Amino acid sequence: NAGRYRVRRWLPEHESRAADLWVETVPFKETREYLQNVFAYTVVYDYRLGREPQSLRVRMPPVQGRDATLSRRQASTGKTPG
Image (cartoon, rainbow, N blue to C red; front, side):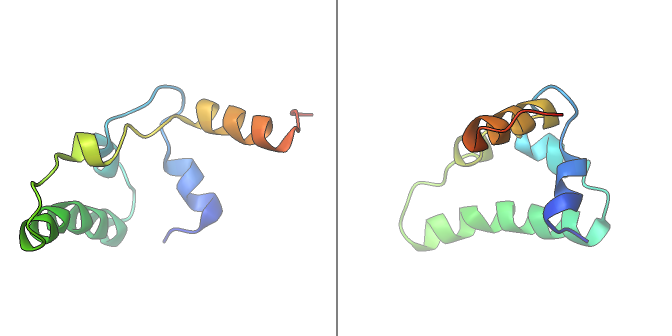
């Protein structure tokens, strides 16, 4: 369902989106449910490890849009489009 190039298509086009809202837009039910479970169980693991549970907003920053992701990749490789 995923893969390196598939996930890029799931990113918001321009703006960033809160991680919990972004997960709801993942087009594959199995992947979407997996991500939801991972986020939910981080609270359980925090509790079992004796830590104060963190909100998803703290744990995972907003998902950046494709434009921002592309710009970061170009900056890190020194490549420009074209």
